[in-house]
Amino acid sequence: MRKISSVSKLAKGTTLCAMIALSAAAYASSPIPAERIAVAKSSVQRAEQSGAPEFAPVEMAAARDKLARAEKAAAEHNKQSATRLAEQADVDAQLAEATAQRQKSHKAATEFDASMQALRQESQRSTTN
Amino acid sequence: MNAKLFTGMGLALVLGACVSMPQPNAALETARLAVQTAEADPNVNKFAPLDLDRARKDLSIAEDASLHHQDAEVDQPAYLATQNARLAQAHGATKADDARVAAGQVERDQIVLASRTREAENARASAANSRVAADVALNQRDQAVSQRDQANDETARVQAELDALKATPTPRGLVMTLGDVLFDTGRAELKSGAGRKMDQLGQFLVEHSDRRVQIDGFTDSVGTDSYNEDLSQRRADSVKTALINRGVQPSRIGTEGYGKAYPVANNNDSGGRQLNRRVEVVIGGNNGTAISPRSGL
Image (cartoon, rainbow over all chains, first blue to last red; front, side, top):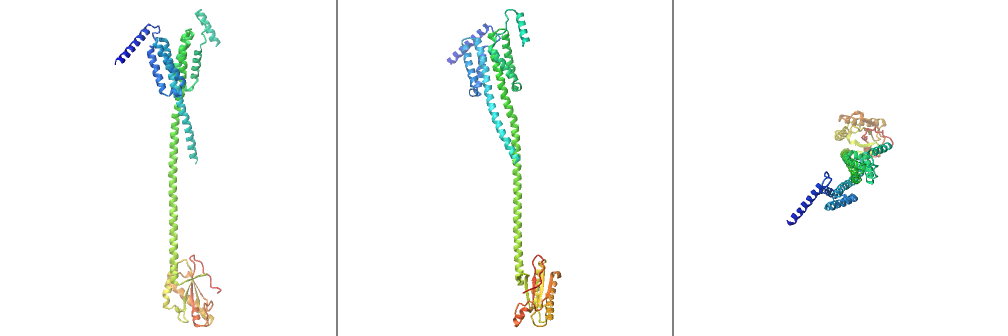
């Protein structure tokens, strides 16, 4: 209980710091890094579950690396860097997921084409027989 | 290109000293190329136009920053434009493959259905053919059995009848000999004792209406030839009359009186002479063939 409350205190502290940093910063219109990082993290997790580590390892590694750096930058209150890295991690993760999907779909389509080819030949043979 | 350059130069001059040509930026070049490639991809236009819009927006932010020499603000939108353009292509390719498979599945279902239908029809047809063939075979077998049985029955029946008539097979046909005991000496009329034999013969000929019959009369050597020939002819005619009375058509019956010709025994003793006094009834084949006249022997 005490641990949780201390963690939530820390989170509150971080949020407070971020809010102060936000209000103090010149880029008032850009989203706060925590939110950006949360979005990027969610994209990275989705990519990891979609087979990207296997099918798109380069994009996946880039997304993970940038997410880690974004979190580090946020911890160091380097807001601009955190935001940019989080944005890049997000788009890299999306690309990793899309690339994995593309390869899976391509594989499935190729296999399907082969099975169709076989089926057409089979059908033609049984028609002419 | 030149016009643009001059316009840019003109604009730069108007804006004054703070404005010069934007510095070439590698990230921006990469982004332009990526967006151009995505724009040229038909799958992107068809399946991922929103991704492409995002990439264009990022690119225009990058171009804008570049134009205004905010070099530090170029790389981030340029990178996002590049990745979004690639994302558009990945999404487009995925959806194109998925669409192709979905369309192919419809075709596959049709082919499979057509093939199953054909198989079912073939199976039904071949089953029907087998059934017909089996029926035909059974029919043929039944017919063959029945024909064989009929033939067996017929053969057995004819044989039994012929056995009853005591007929002997010869090249001319089945020969039944009626001995002289059926006639009084010198007379042509059949004695009443001949009735039973005539009944059997008549019945046989009525039942086998396709068979012809030849009746030949013979005598011993006692007496003149003309007398003997006349007597043998009249005896043959008597048998013919008896058969006609029992329902045999006259046209099927031939008669001949041979007199003392064709003896079957020696005329020197009474036993031989008795054997020579006879009437032979020749029954023809079951195809209505004519019976050849007596010759030789």
